[in-house]
Image (cartoon, rainbow, N blue to C red):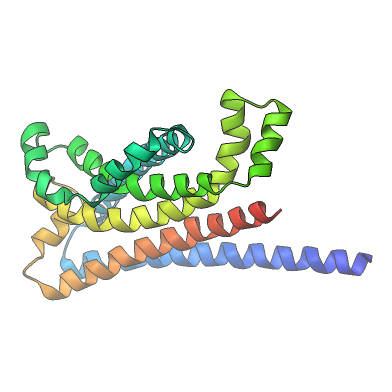
Amino acid sequence: MGPHVVYSHRAVGMHFRKWHTALILAILVGVFGYYYFLSEISHINPSSLLLDVASSITRIGIAYVISAALGFLLAVILFKSRSSSFLLPIFDVAQSFPTFAALPLVVMFWGPSEFTIIMFLVFTMIWPIFFTIISSLKLVRQEWEEAMQISGIKGLRYIWSFLVPVSVPALIIGSIIALGDAWEALIATEIIVGIKQGFGPFFKMFSADPKITTLGIVGLLTIVFAINKLVWLPLLESSHTMHEE
């Protein structure tokens, strides 16, 4: 490979990084600009509106971390276990259970708290993550497993060196599905629980104003789009690249 080819590749890489950085900045500026516009139209204090956004994103974030950790742990424990033939059908029924039917009882038991919302979101998100990861682990090539056994890699080193890397693409795909479900569940959960800050209270406050409600929905979609574009799609592309290598 000649020096001009190497230089060309470096130039393309630098151009891509600059373009991607500019896109990130444009999306972030667009999101903040839109919410400032929304606060002006709806006559809400911008800091109050940003607090609503931050509160909902924080709940989603905490619930996602718990769901990803538990989903991965369950998948690692069960993908080779004999009990999986018994437990997987039970988990399959659990994921199809109409969770909103139980939400009022949960609120009565735990009260209208942040904990109630986060635990409900965990129950919503954990199943897509768990089933995607365990399906991926069950399809792992036999020769890869044999290579780990020959190398004598066991225990935590086996999990960290083998199971985590092969699970990353499935974790990302499951996370995208789970977060799509979580954003939908979040709004209704915040309204039912009766929390003071978040997207739910915002939509409840302006439920009689179709214009503000529509603008709020567009604002929510801009956040979902920005997170997918800036976080999940790059992670998905890089995970496939590492998997191919």
